[in-house]
Length: 309
Image (tube, rainbow, N blue to C red):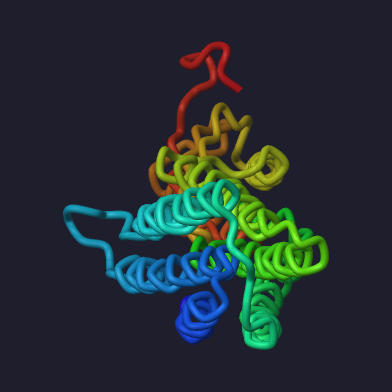
């Protein structure tokens, strides 16, 4: 997954860099504020790919004494910085420049250059978007869930690229609409209005990514239905009288920590029997739920934990 995600981020970064240069040149030649807003958007996306590559690299560091569960959560930290970058560099510039263009509108020139750059940018962004979406769909199929459901907890680098590229495609359509309306109506404030719309779109993307990455950094459990499946798997094991408590923590998109307290029946009377039971449960849970990398079994009589399910 890490190698595929790295390829997706590299493709997105290369596309964004080329597009940013083209948009900037076209924006300066045409005077289109919407195109300059899109250039700022692409610059922000390019810088964000650096954050995402850093996240992928650092999250693969092996566990050590200071971080015994590894560095998987670093992915969400760098992805959070990417969300901030989208908000500050992309949305901030787009809205400020858009407001100025609405107050003091200028005619858009060099329309051939504008439409050519928008069309080429749409193709490049589309290629990057398709790769990210295909990866999300493939991973979702492997997990047996819908693409939208998987996207909520997908590898943060791939998730960020998917959101960025979706916003980029919509932003290009908004920029084209703003330029076209300015030309057709003769009211050049439409170009600035498109820039503001692009900024608001980026605020929505930044908020969504920031919220989701914050939730992961704080510590997020598996969905309730998955927890129930894990609980049922453990409860069905011979030797388990009841599952007293089950806690889950997502350390990364493909790494989950599970802590479970169980009430053993009378068959598990020796240390060796408990050890064998724990190994059996660990093996069964990992086989059925490959993302579970750490499972800790704590024999706890149910009477000692009243009210805990």
